[in-house]
Image (tube, rainbow, N blue to C red):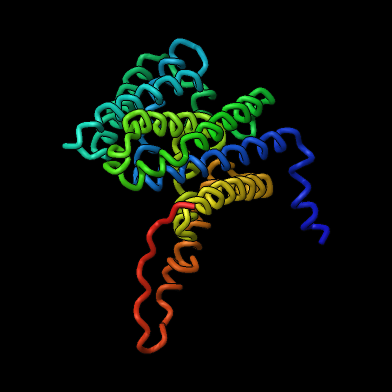
Length: 297
């Protein structure tokens, strides 16, 4: 009992861990909500593209010695805008356009970085996360930006869902589909940027996509999915930090491994869509259960 109590309370005795928990929970919640829209759109690749498209901005910031996060945010937003514009040509699928700009942005970042005399710890922490070394100012920044993201996502939730389910119906209903595409890409970009300190540029896709994928396996209702995804994201981040503190291992990597483990469990045991659940023998003569349609709240 004493060992369990020490495990639960030990990390909270340190200020750096309290900051890490605060940022991890906030990033998990925001990533879960925005990631749910990404999964509904079937555009998980955009998270990977945006997370890598911030790289040239970071490289420019590194070369000219200004804020890395600001540089990454500007580059990510510009790339997201380019993807939204070029995706309007329906001859090309969205993932094709994303792939083009994903590769171009990362290549540009490598070229720019090659002009720098060397690397620094700040650039390494951008790539792999620095959640155990964040400041009070970082906590405030994530909190403010996260709240603004959630408010904006709530304001356009119905419109984003409508576009995700049927773009042509949304366009026929008079919704500004192009503008909503830009809004979603911007939401993803800022979410990626504020999550970089938690898990880093390389692993941020997992925090954005995996909790939402878990929720998609667990429910057929969009409203429930919007609740489950941030809960899974925040809980996984906290669990990963506990393991990092206990075993002195990389926090960002453990957060990703925890949320991936949750996904595997959902994939196996989800009530209606889990592999083992669907494999259970049905009563003789019973008709197959039809695949449910995703429902709005």
